Image 1: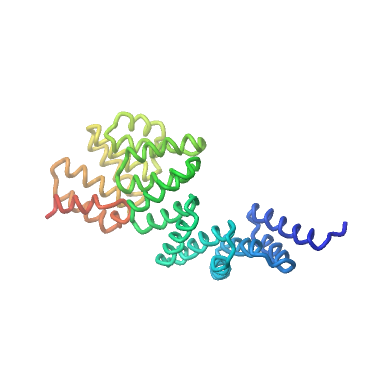
Image 2 (image 1 turned 90 degrees about the horizontal axis):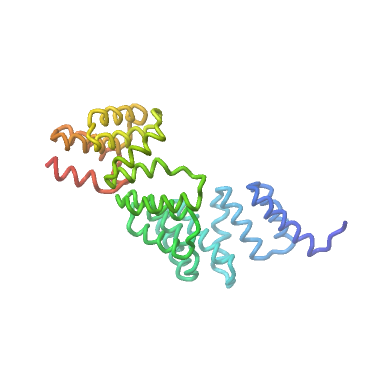
Length: 294
């Protein structure tokens, strides 16, 4: 069947979206470019830019998004281009520009949950945990049905040692996405909230001698249940698998402090600090060093 001019444009565009949805980005790009050649609309330009972004070709995507942002267009393509431009700068590690465009997106399109979410992720990567949580809170306020928003917020809760917050968000993640496995983190939260028996019952259900994170946290919980020697054994076993785990050294330090062994504790704390504990988890190790090692 012969297609009219308008039908041909529509078919190329529709095919491009189908390929894009299937993550066949090279094919999608060819289809969108054919559509754009016949009908150079801003909407098609957005999809070309979006495809380049998904292909990690930021050099091609960024100027196209910028053209759309600077246009007089007021539709969804402008909002999404503004957000994607911020994402491009974030990918390029150009944080000031990324923050500028995230803030601009939020200012002009305040009901776009993904703008707050993406800004939150950038702030989290910069260890600005309080500010990141505020952005995730806003994203969830706008769109409360996305499990990933809770997942990212609970990571901030972990980083700031707000385990009640983390536990609540874990339960929400599980409710919204029943297939996801949250048992290990549930056990960890119970342990940090001093609900050691509840934690132990979960740890026993998911025992894995080849998982360094599991062994590390199970070891600390054993210590908190009164079996410090077994706890240290499990944590040291975890370090044989993951020798650069700063949290394991933090845990060994806590056991040494409890056993009144300050020299051993300070050695473990300094090791945790040198492995980047503070960037990943916050100031706890530094605070313990000031308290016990000066």
